[in-house]
Amino acid sequence: MKNEGKKETEQTKETEKIKITPKNINENESESEKQSFEVDRRSVYRCVQCGTCRSVCPVFDVVGWESANTRGRMLIIKSLLEGRPPSEDVLSSLASCTTCGICASKCPAGANPPEVVEAARAQLVKCGITTDAQKNLKSAIITYGNSFGETRARKHWLSGTERSKLPEKSDYVYFVGCFDSYRYPEFAKKTFDILQRFGVTLLPDEHCCASPLLRTGFREDAEKVMQHNLEQIRKVGAHTIITSCAGCYTTLKNNYPEELKVISLPEFLAEHLEELNLKKLDLTVTYHDPCHLGRHNKVYDAPRKVIQSICTLKEMKNIKENARCCGGGGGVRTGYPDISLELARNRLKDVPEGVDYIVTSCPLCVRNLRDAGGNIEVIDIVELVAMAIE
Image (cartoon, rainbow, N blue to C red; front, side, top):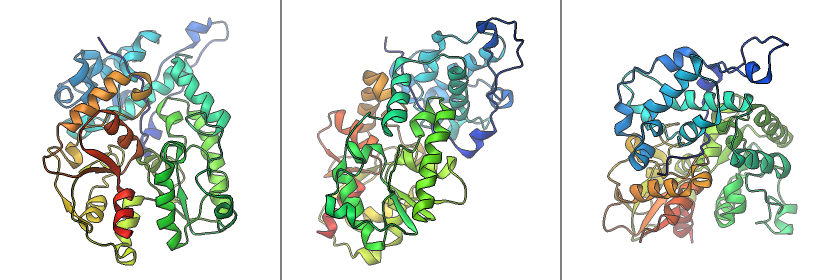
């Protein structure tokens, strides 16, 4: 059965409180004895094993194994804390979590399993336990500055003339992200065409935001990547970062220094609707809430405000904090495409009848929902805005 999954987790400020350092070791111990496993026990034992999470976990809904739901993962992490040697046999359980966060939103005990799972992954990395996919992802980001291992310039979607005219200094920077830079450059171009009206510029040398490294446990490597981007931000003199990727948004907002103001593209657009002067379109659309924009950061109203200024919004069956995960995040799509696409197909079941488009505000959600094979076109919110501007 398809009980596998490789996942990167969204990290919040609270995650930093989790202790993931090895226990004290003796120099005479063997390498296997030196590898100990330790996370904040309070975070683990907050789970009372009630099983509420089983009813909402999207991966468990597809796979059906106890180890593929939140309670099972927490029990595995507890066993590691209580002496079970860290080994590769726990990877399929911990890696199959999409960290969509619906378990945390429903937990009656107030546990935050995505935090715990992310901390456990980081500890496994310290113990030298990783998948080939994790290693390849890390290598791509460290070597090429992006999660795809692309060798093209990150701003290839701009002409040479456009690149030469970019302001060197600005209060606002558009952080494009790996997906829009290399998989959906048309999104990047449309977004920047809009943002340029407000004096927004690009970083001279943007690298991956480091979200994939954080999610897969490579925290030390993530720090180096984040430091590079911070230097670029300081070089521009920006105090506000705008991003159209939900993964970039949650990472920049929760893992970078607090003095930076980070806003999502829907939030920025919602604040500037009058200046955009959008025309009404004779369309009916539905909206998919990305997990890391919605549940993780509570950005629900801004995208809906933008959509309703343009056309009719017809909501899905499960929305906002109850929205089902598209299955595309955290490496599950890369490592376990069958599981990932089944999650996307389940999400498409929530689409109401009589809509022209499914709109979302995350390129990864766009890709996974498109690949799930529905009969309704999936578009990014910037595409809808571009239609209303033209």
